[in-house]
Length: 638
Image (cartoon, rainbow, N blue to C red; front, side):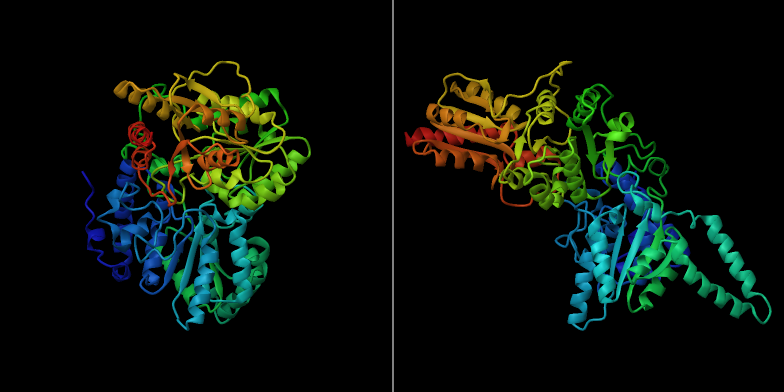
């Protein structure tokens, strides 16, 4: 039974928040948390980040008007309360569902989402651009960037701060400091933003001392002012203010992110400052929901769970195959036991990339660089230049951030860096910013780069071993979610170079060449089509997206009248494009019918992965339909 939310129901416009008393606003915060927990328990999503900024969201809407002021949420997985308060409460149950609300801010969804986000550390740069536009247009609105949840570990945030400080434009940056990204923050900057001087007893003692000094007869006020000036001089040595003031920002804080009055006063002060200002806010990730407070890493991005217990709703342990991520982590750990030159690198995602176990077993050979994909790649290049074999585990969508480093620091120098591309293909409910569909296209044309795409868990293990002995840069691409349950022998060998695997050969006139796990769907579709029509269709597993098995492809082009190329990635520039280029260059296309299955030239929306695969023709039923249509056309032409 959904919770009763009378205060939330009464919010008809974002500005209604400003009319509430502090007591009413605190009650509204409780209602927001109830709705967020109940909804995410059914839809999955980024629970802990959004729970941590409920009071901050309310304070921002008390002090700013989203009709006029521009509020930009960094990353965006902190914006659930904001969605609820900006006209989307009735649709909130559709969060991350196909055709429903997006999991991240989207200008297409609401006029109150002033900038589309999904990847980290972009808010300050975007906000500064908007501040420039405001001043050029002679407007007087406020621009506020809310950054945090680890985004301050990334270089772009400091590029934005540096430029903002140099211009002196009026801009407010709210640093949501919860000491977390997805996992615990790493790096010297996270130590610099330490809370050791901001714990409650320190702030309480400071207030009491100020009150005592002010009460001293005659000299109290002057003495307090003198001490405040001295504090301003000293605070640079003992607080995070030093960094931001060195960047020419006015620094306010730290303030409690769960105290509405403190937040309101801090934001009110920031509004009056006519220069770049940073408000440092301390929050608790998962605030208000005990399971999320106790385990914010798990509840950062979570699937369906019981709101009463926090236990994930899933089948019993051992009743489903392990995920590709789990197989990757276990395999790399096992390989590292035999090869002490293997180093594992992640960008703030040891759990998400399956490397936690590796880190526990080989702490000296495990590196979490924070949300710094560019640095991760060049750091790996340095390791490789000195004879080590770095495995860089990054989601496909985040690997895009390090393109220049892949080209110049790794491939140009032909260094043996292994790119372990997790979440490749359709990811699902996280939507357009997270679908891993472009990696083959943006890697395939880089000289020296090789790309392996295993069809299942067993082949993933073989691909990783192959990568560990490969002479040059190589990427191993694998999807999100469970494998098919392929048997995993205790020992395994490397994959043959540039060679396909024949899965069925029946003397057919048509063949499917698949790349990656879609091979299994292609095989099932071919069997279904043959059972229906009596016409055989052969199936091949390409394995290599680059270099392509050219001789085998030319042999298949000469043997079949129709080839169907299947991949779970962008068609434009992808595996199928490469095969067509290969056949065209060899003059093998005349007389050959070729059909490609893959993702069109659009950004893939959010929704369940199975539903999206069905929509875009990648599931068994759709591939069977494609066989009917394609082979029927081929028959008519003959």
